[in-house]
Image 1 (cartoon, one colour):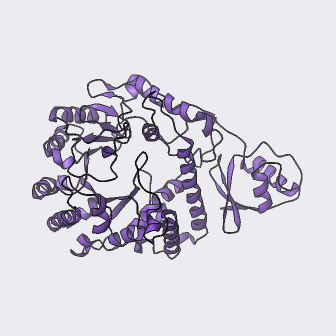
Image 2: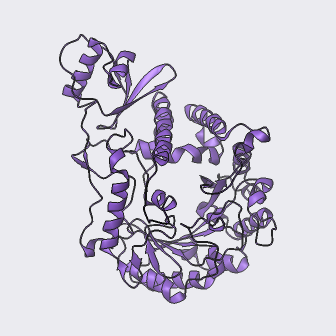
Image 3: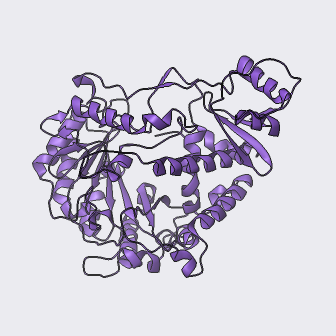
Length: 499
């Protein structure tokens, strides 16, 4: 990380620099949009970089020299353009991940679930199931067009995917029999309640399949926290049943721990450290002598449009959610500095490491003349979601709002182009002046949950952008502190990659 000090004055500064100034402790830093570098800056230079006519003559000279000699702090802002859409033959090739909603039915009624909130943009709980014919057609469509440079992935989604094992089994067989399906990896998103011996028999029936079968099981914390909201349709708790089922799987195949991810959804009142403690000493692993920590994904419940009482943490004597996250951040950075990040709860790591890894592997290429704003993947290519009735969507998070076509029609280029143009029109007036342009991960899902159901308009509210900028700012601050640590503490980052 370069430290830009002050040198003797002289010269002319170019237009307003495209950068973001922030502080860590008493020091000033700049994130430079065009180069994506993090730079330590003196107070006077920080003032000059923020514009408004501030900064001494010496600071302005440093700025001019940085622009002329290092191509830093440039004022260049690209022309914003929609994501380019190719010919019909190009929108449905090199597909990577197929997601099948095999049923809309679910055996749970989680209190925070979007499907039970009558929101309009997302479907309600239902009983429709994907047919075997639709599922097999989706598999053939996907594998015929798969990216041959990477292993294809097929995920089973719901509802509760285990409520339609007929389709799960048919899909696995169809992929196995397809000339391009031999390397297929499978993943089931499940609440774990129905993972009985029959399901486990199927997953473990042969060595080749079991090594390719991944499970993502929803567990929201210790029993009291999990069962508070994750109850079955009869109102009964589910935690003990899930733990028993995970144990049953591990008894038969301890290596399944390598392919198991726990998916946490934090809903108010959040007790982050109680959740962290559970996964730091995960009972199904400890009881069987499995020493590795569980893989964990952490989400915060999307409560937009739902009536939840604010301030629930303070009402029971807990710090606010933001205060808990800040405590976790300091815990993480302390462990990082001591090269002991592997010893803290995987929940704490999962809060911060995905963003740190993304930023660490950011492009350092100069910002070009044109740029497509947002964090959208190519619709249908990185992910292709198929609904129970065979509609195609960019992913499972776009509700009832977005459609790319059907299994019968395939991905329609006109729909892809319109989707790209609608997103561009929703953000083009803001992204050009945003310092987080190259870090942004706002995508079609943000439009879906903010759709105007009367007009069909697909906006991206400024509140979404503020939330993203706040998150990226915290990542920048963390990375500054990490870069100040000895190089050996961050060697593990070099072993990571973006997926």
